[in-house]
Length: 231
Length: 231
DNA sequence: TACCATAATATGGCCTACCAAAATCATCCA
DNA sequence: TGGATGATTTTGGTAGGCCATATTATGGTA
Image (cartoon, rainbow over all chains, first blue to last red; front, side, top):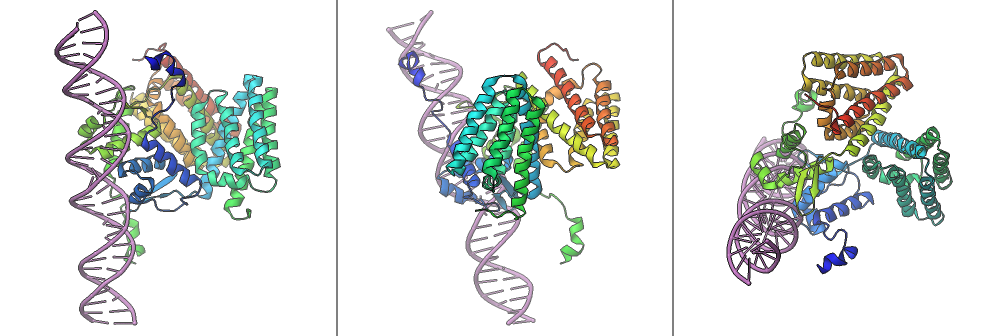
């Protein structure tokens, strides 16, 4: 009862993240940040050793990542890190354009100044990260910008879809933000989204969001065809 | 080289579906067709017995269904069949509207008469199923209509997303198609999509696809609030 | 030396059995 | 009647083993 009386306030939210969830995050992270490269084999027993968990866990994790599209399973050969081809990347950007456009329109139609303010805050952090050349920060704050876009209108399902797709193109994202002028163009395009939302201009917000993703897609295509040297 | 010369042509595509895949399909099917109801607990060992497979398989299957959104995992209590609430259903329909609208627009912009022809064929089968009161057939052919819409413009990623979301609202779908007049209205709305595509009218196709999903969504909302008695 | 058959190795797919911790249920006593 | 206590159920997790297939050595023969 000590716990109930006043202990609830300091109750740890997730006292028990299961080992499986921990392992899932680790492996996903390892794929996203490039520790495992596309095409690499993910040998179950090796992963057991590296993660320090049993094969059961590893298999469940691989299954999960498979359905996320981060891992592909070759029949009779086993799991590898999924390779993203040209066309699939384009499709992912296209879906993001449609959904982010939708969310932007919904935000604009809310006519709630708090939304634009929250987005502006994220945008400032993105610019700040760009100035500091903190590319991980740029990515993180860009995600948070879009998360705000979706969560402000309670579209967590669509956010889930976007998020799911985004991890698959993460390495592309980290390249697009490093391209020439992206530190100026990117935030400018996002500012247009915020402006339209602040004006309550649904069509404008939709179009601005579409434009931003579309231009990111174009850069990604260039990167993929190797025409855009990075760093 | 014998294999390469002419053997490849008769190569069996998928000689071995793994036990896991079989079990996955079984359980998913059982959830979709209502054998397991929303909120039902899915006790691992019971499933082992019912499916005749080991816990390893069952756990992987549950993990997979969890990431599909069909199963929810209560911490320290185990997996249950996910419950679909009102709002989530609405969001799913909304996403479908955006993506199917996008696909319809792309189809229209192709100006390829074969697309409209293929869609018309699916549409005929839907109408036929309605006449025969074959509701399973209606659902199947409706899916195939949309699959055509996406695959004709090579948008298999978006189709995957739509498909993933659709299984979660499957029971709603099977209710919406049984409502009054849906046997007339539904096909009529789909015919408008096809017409717009045939005319090469991108905006029209987009709008018609949005309208169709939106009206399905409205019916689903009515069903969910219990205002629409079925059967 | 070239090549083929065979054996070893690696690995995925699948299984059984076990343990610990939490939740749930039953029981029994004050 | 209301709890404390204990038994049962179930998840989360582990260990290890078996079998089938695929790859890779290996070695012997033409």
